[in-house]
Image (spheres, rainbow, N blue to C red):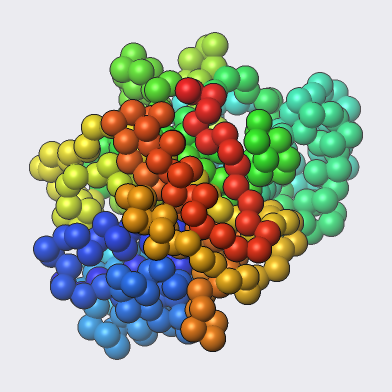
Length: 421
């Protein structure tokens, strides 16, 4: 099969590396791709992930047999709908189902309607009303932009003044464009966060090993939110009794709710959980593989990812026995100095060969080749993943490898997984 992957980050690099292991995949393309993905797939940098007509034209021109759409934006824009309309089999939810991520208000209303445990919340499309409501609340409190915001549309405000500033920035200042025109204000749940990525074909839902992301840019979970500074899997917090409760109270009810609403969700459903004193509750849904969680979860997959994607699309997931290796995986993200704020690109990267010689896998998130040299081309630049018999082993190996990599201004957290260790 000739397969096309849409996207150009670390998540897509992890997906591509797993797909090329499949005997079903004869040729792999990626649009737009990056310098790392180019080592395993033919990249088409001129076609951006949000260029739906361009993606369809590329798939038809190249005679692609199957497409995997991984980023949130093209899913929300109906990329899967457009490809399937041309008879091109595609992995990922259609636009109507991708609303699970594209609108936090949509998914919150779904959870309320079907009794899926989540934080108490109120929706506002008027800034004055939102500010008046905040005067009646206490901090900490959470302000969320309704739409897609590169993983940065959630503000956990420690004071009411901070929450008010977030509302003003989003609703009046246009911080996230149209995505912030409506906001969700919700209680701040207390507990530990865990992510469960799930394969689902709309009939059955199959969870992957639970993972934990590290969103804040600095050690100790300090500083602004990022797209993710590292992750590990499986999560020791996700004990068998917790997993059973999540399946019974959240995963299965979510599948039933989507079907009841006519949302034929086929792809990966990301379920962000808060393990509270009252039990697990949903923080958010995403409609695709997480990033960087995927860089920690997919290396544990022993089964054929291409076979899984085909089964999801053809609604025969229940026929598969998806297998995972034992032990653990840890991913440490190397970011550009200044991220998630302003940063400079074009910094020469060295040491990847040394890192991989130590047994790690280096996933490229924001890289490019300039004048024959590998350079930085994004906020999150690389994800260094290592496997181990235990979480401690995986974390130790990931950091040993990450320290071999250098570029001007490189920044990484030094405490990935440390709370669990």
